[in-house]
Image (cartoon, rainbow, N blue to C red; front, side, top):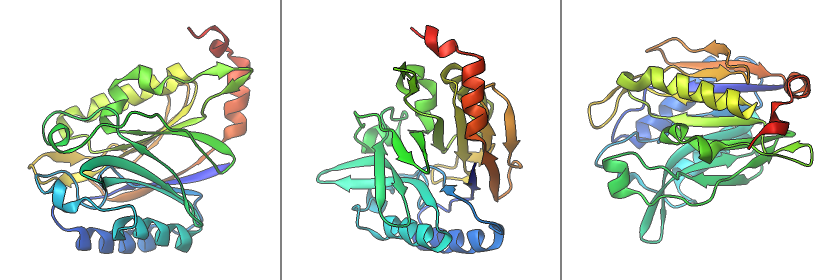
Length: 256
């Protein structure tokens, strides 16, 4: 059993100080019981805007340090996405932090049209994180539209991963698409899917309504945050049930 906390927050554009302070207050207010994993939205400290370049940080910057401090305080893993500067390039990087150290990261493969394609460099390597006794596939927002990139494997009676983690900035006009696509990914890969989306307006004036959810490999919405509300959605994932479900419905043995 692993309890996740999915942070559906209003990210203020151009104001890293205010966002980090707000997360600190939000978590202290909303987390009443222990969690094993906290997940923040995409571009968690700044949102999307033309100022993305100035908000990019090195891996030893304050926003990665904030994730470490949060992981230590709540004694859990913490996942967030932010712009990271690597030499002359900027990547949209998902960082997976434990209380002790960074366990790994994933650089977004599929960059969205406009600002992100203009500013960021696409990642090339898919990443699977092993933590908390399970295997996790980190994905970022637009990645949800590319099923081959999240394709699970079943080799020597072992699955590549058990749960997908989508950190998102999906705007309101495409909010329903996000949940439908993530549901399809969960069904076809026989894995849980965690979807964490923001609310509020970004630096381009785009509105976001949330839709943060936990999805089962059967395609069920196990729980979902309220729209347009800041919330830390908590749910306990049952990986023993997942194993039993996979054994009872062994579709993976026929995957192409």
